[in-house]
Amino acid sequence: MNIQTETIFSWHDKLVKKEVSAVEILTLYKKRIEKLDKEIQAFLTLDFEHALQQAKNIDEQIKQKQEISLLAGLPVGVKDVLMTKGLRTTAGSKILDKYQAVYDATVVARLKDQGMVMVGKNNCDEFAMGSSTENSAFYPTKNPYDLTRVPGGSSGGSAAAVAASEVVYSLGTDTGGSIRQPAAFCGVVGLKPTYGLVSRYGLIAMASSLDCIGPFTKTVAESAAVLSIIAGHDANDATTQDKKIKNYHAELSANVKGLKVGLPQEYFIKGLDEKIKSIIMKLVRQLANQGAEIIDVSLPLTEYALPVYYIIMPAEVSSNLAKFDGLRFGSRGKEQKNLFAYYAHTRGQGFGAEVRRRILIGTYVLSAGYVDDYYLQAQKVRTKIYQDFTKIFTTVDVLLTPTTPTIPFKLGDKISDPLQMYLSDIYTVSANLAGLPGLSVPAGMVENLPVGVQLIGPRFSESTLFNIGLVIEELREPINQPNL
Ligand code: GLN
Image (cartoon, rainbow, N blue to C red; front, side):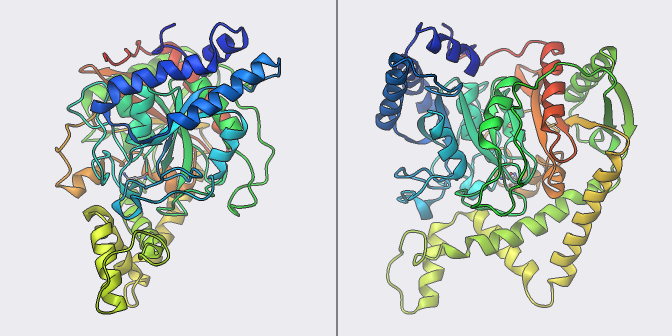
């Protein structure tokens, strides 16, 4: 058994054949966490006690010859913006340092129903705001491939935990790239599903019209397996679609023959690392050899995606985070001379610099006199960006781009320059603005660090993305496991 190469499928197989028990699997991962996580710091909270109970339940079911689900008995990490009943849930923020969730997010409940063994909560940028996990109020997570580098963010803990084999898979959230970008930086598969496919109930909201929950896994097939469980209508989230959910995993087929793959020229411009570009272009040629039709396309509004995102997102942030005032939610600050002073004190102490910056920007773009020029204008451009994509998808089935313009950067490199940090998401935010699915698959290695290729498709085209992802997994150069 090599913990670094095991998958959901291989573990499941071994469990069913009784070659290993769920408790033994948990013990292996626990040892690994105890050995590695002092340095990687992918977790904010660990809960081995309940995890052991969950593992024992699965072993009991196996003993009783009950059929167990594919995901049963497998150790999982959950980004700390997702509610986990009875367990500390901080959103990476001091203001929720002592908060214990009182209910499970729908995705968490669905995985628990399948017998997940949740080992703990993954570190993240405060309220999911960031691209490096350095905005966590507690500590930064390190990239398992190079401990001096960032794992990406905001779901850096979830990505690093999978890359380091501290869990079999994990959950993250993606508002502007926070699943795909850290997946690319950590050499794992990250899926941002179509907006409305996966319930957001129990997700501590950052920007509600952009937020999506999705899995981090080592392989594409595992991503499909997790999506099949977490996707689907939820009465508690009115934006979820009432669609029959496929068994994404059963429908996989590694075939790109006749598939029209668009290369948006705006994603291959100055600023993109030449070595990343050459890895992506090599994959493109290989896909063409497999029968894919490669088509150069243009998404002319791409340059507006980041500016639009950095108006709409903070506007929603300022509204969503208003409830953390120390009275309704958030830890109570010291008594002050009046209510206003109390709010200012609690929020000033509880929120970190990046969160405060975004609340200020958001409040500004929504304020009377500016709302038309900023917020409403941004909403109009957002619609245009969506139309840009809709038009392109009449000519191609899928778009292929790099996931990030650069390799994982050093800790500390961008933290004092928010604009540089925001540029990490240049290739990912558009999919959120348009509500489209995006899948990042490891594409190769540059200077011993992983880089990712991103696939973006029309709404609900996850199956197509998985199928191309499978082919890419076969074609690419091998991705080494981190040397830990
Ligand atoms: N890095 C982006 C930001 O800082 C995206 C964050 C996210 O997707 N949660 O807003």
